[in-house]
Length: 386
Image 1 (cartoon, rainbow, N blue to C red):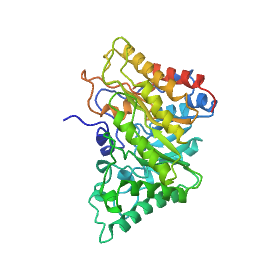
Image 2: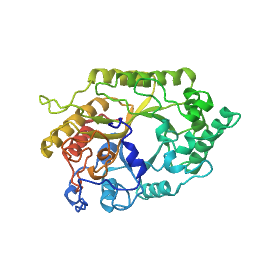
Image 3: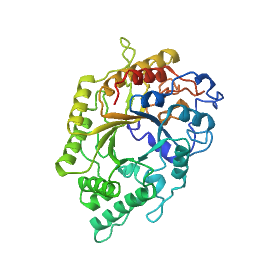
Image 4: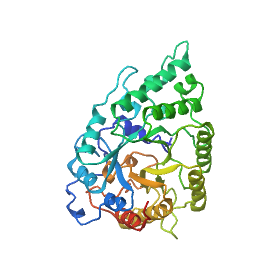
């Protein structure tokens, strides 16, 4: 059976600090070919924005700051970073009583050494398959709502206390809206009395801890056909936050955009630009800011020719950014990785039918800038000032 949209992360989370395997040799280019290109963050900063990327704490052959070639890309293009996995409960909470902060601490130290901001991702990833196994099997006792609230608030206060003043934007809740527009349910949400009660408490606790931080709801609803119900569910959740006075500042739009079918007449894939603009209009009308939190392009349906494929990926992304940058509420843009070699999409099913690696990121496996990088630079150059 093919994996769903998010189940492709299982391999990444299971091997959170390993490199992708299969179609790559080790990168040998030390980014020398990129010496003359524009820094994406420098271009973004000129418009009152920030550009950044996800990064890991793994070994030197992965998408980690320990990888000198990858670190060079981050230093060149990024003014803000986010941990790919190291702040998620699966990595941070080995059991109910302890925290493993060391890997994330190392990422944060790298960011601060290089004058980069840091986002927190995530204080609650609310899908049962992405919570640690102990949490789904947890005994909440005779007063389950009280114990669930204690467990959640202890997690949030412990994390935010540790990084107070060093992280000023958090994905407080990640992906609680299902693709059919309903809300996900987990052991902890059932114990606490429902998903709305859980997510409301998460944001209220984060606000009490961090009065001045940006608190974000993050999800992957997108502009491709088939996302209509997911978008509607996210809007309903955001409306509920405002009606209940829940302190949510922004919507994180992951922006894992994808080309599921190939249209030879356009060279890319189908998209619902009008419907997507309507969605964004409704979000900002509720006084939410927006962020691009996890950008990449899944090219699984494009023909194999690399030059043509790179052009199509870049054109598809250009069209997306032309829409997104129309909104002055968008100030942060983060890629979910800078280099094809280490993209989570190499493990995400369906894989390409020709067995070739996906070319999802601004840089190729040998750290050379691709047309996608050029299109991103052009989009930032022509964006209005924030």
